[in-house]
Image: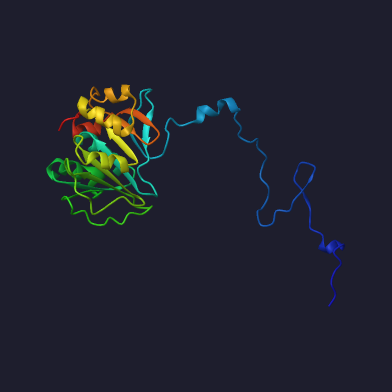
Length: 257
């Protein structure tokens, strides 16, 4: 058996012109090279014009003091707990907007009558918001393709839930006021929302969340629809503005139910 020399013409790779006067690399199986076009480029000082006015992906829960959208990434690959000391109206807006992101919403409540109209109207006939008695939420089977948000509307002293936060399953606990169980829930939550409370409650919340005095005192004067959202390292006042559809379903923003 004879072996051709590597220097022989038969073993040399073919080289063809690219149309620019320079030899080009062979393109095997990709057809002809198309026309040349200038690359899309943007000066560095103009890049900011392409920025989106949001800080995360998720659902818009309102606008900040500068009128920019405040976005909450509620569908997460890790367990996520939220405690909201506030009104039913805000919790229901959050449930609707969570469903709009594609999440299934399970509401654990002792006042199903307050949620029935919302559950029936959401999802265009699809059961994207389901209602369950307190302590009766079944396993939800959350996954990346089917995230779940559990809203616990169980009064001042919600019992320990059978369904807890898990990957792709966030839990939102609604407390109408600062109850004896609130400090425990706030300390284990990744996010805490506080709406208008009494001055005494505001002072206690300020100590728990380590708030500046000015923000602590402001909690007793917040307008309807305004929430102070707090994490371990950040705080932001947010005004929740309802859409026309949300207003038609839930009415105007209100702190008291």
